[in-house]
Structures are given as structure tokens and as C-alpha cells.
Image 1 (cartoon, rainbow, N blue to C red):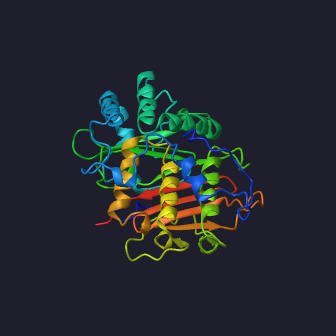
Image 2: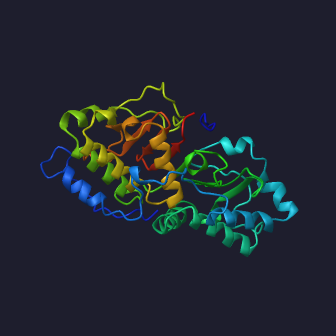
Image 3: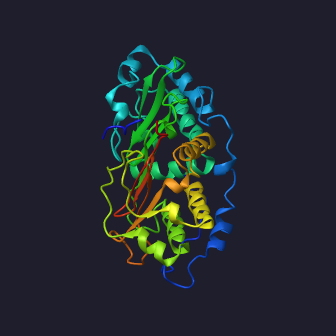
Length: 335
């Protein structure tokens, strides 16, 4: 699927099966109290004035440079590609950007360690632990995944990309300006029991958000059928979006949306989180977003919706939790 125009343990939440229409469901006040405990995440209004994004001298990008310099001429013929190569524009929940796998003899022991260090650099400590568990479950660990290097580190345009089953990560030193994460990324988990999958805390959190809304707003956000998971291209300012417009919410409810986004972003490094909120602010803030939850795919028939989507002109977060998790993030500032 082409790159759109302009193209993890997650912080813990106690799972609940409380029906969303129950008096025991979460209140706005309790939700804010819980979300407010997330440490180290930058508030929407508290970002630095300069554009916040990973730079060429960010820790992960420095390791990308070291990895590139360590490659032999033969290795480069297989995994080093032009920056504008078509493979950089492809996204999927299960594919390999190049043939050599990280665990193959193709890489030296030191090179494999550098790749692990890059993954550690683009995630939070909790997010790295989450990825270790997910990749082990889905494909025997990071050794089963593949990487590519697009462009040349230090030349002005480059991107490192990791792909494999249920995972795409990027590091680009802001070579793709004002595109969060350097372009669309993917995460997932092959566990089909919803309460056992590693991203169940995200499902719990977004359903707590729905439960905290006024009944009329919650009804507007709940739809019957989800769009295809591949429908994650940015629609721009003239796009039509389904679900509940966040602009219709009161200020405290909009704060709930922001706190939920911070929770969802907890697995990623701070520079990428900061850029997400810079992009969001440039595109109109949380008020530009729409919330949608889908009745289909309610795995436990407990009205804790396993499919949900947050979307705006330059923002797509599509979470398909049934039969197992495929999730796509695509966020970029509009021209």
C-alpha cells in the first residue's frame, strides 16, 4: 500500500469487563486522575517552540550511521537502497522489506547488536520490553525480522526501517519532514484471546474514554462496521470522517482524548511523541479528530469494543483487535 500523500509493556491499566452502560463504568474525573499518572509525556500545549522531532544526532539515528558504516559492499547491495525506493512506501502487517533476516549469518554479531540498539532507541523502555515479547510470540524474536537502509546516513536523506510479522518501525532523523515516526508504522500481536494480547490495555483505555462520554456523544461514536484496515491514507482537510467529532466535546472531554493519545503513545521514544503532538497542533489540534468504535468483532460480547479508530485530516490510528491485533499509525502535518 503506498505511503499516503504528504505523503511496548504499555503503561499498565487494570483490565475491566464492566459494561460501558454500567453505573460502575469510569467517570471523567477518575479517568483524568488515572491518565495523569503517565510520566514523561509532553502536554499538547507545553511543547518547545521549535519543531520537535528526532534529529540526525538522536541516539537511534547515530546507531543507524554506525550500522551503515559497518556494512560491507556485498551487504549494501542487499539492504541499502535509494531513499526514494518504492519499498519505503509500502506498509503491511506482515512482510519483509529485504530478504536477509536479522538472525541470519548475513549480519555479524556486532551488527545484530546495533540493530537491537536502534530498536531500543526508537522506543521507550516499556515499549522495548513490549516489542521483545511481541516479536518472540509472533516470530521467535527480532532475529526473524528484516531491515533496510534507504539513502545514506549523514547525506541529508536517510531512513532505517524494520519490518516483519506485526511490526514496522522507522528512524529517519527527520528526513521526512513533519511526518511522525518518519512515516506510517505498524504494530500487532497474534494472540487471539483479547485479554491475553499485549495491547489489551489500549483497548481498555479507549473503551474507558467512550464510557466517560455523554450518552449522546457515545452513541455518535459507536458504529456498526469498521473500514478496511488498509484504509489508512491521510484524507486531508477536505476529508470526510465517520464517528464522533472531538470538536463537539466539552473542554474536559477533549482533555480525556488527549490523555488517551498520550497513553497510546507510551511505547515510543519521547522525540516521536513530541512530533505527534506538534503535527496534531499544526493540523488543528484534538478538535480536528474523530472517534469511532465498531460493534463488529466484539470478541467476548462484552461491549468492550475491540475495533476502534481515531482519525483527522493528517491523523489515522486504526486498531483492529479481532481476531487478533493489527494496528496502523499514520500521522503527518498537512501543507
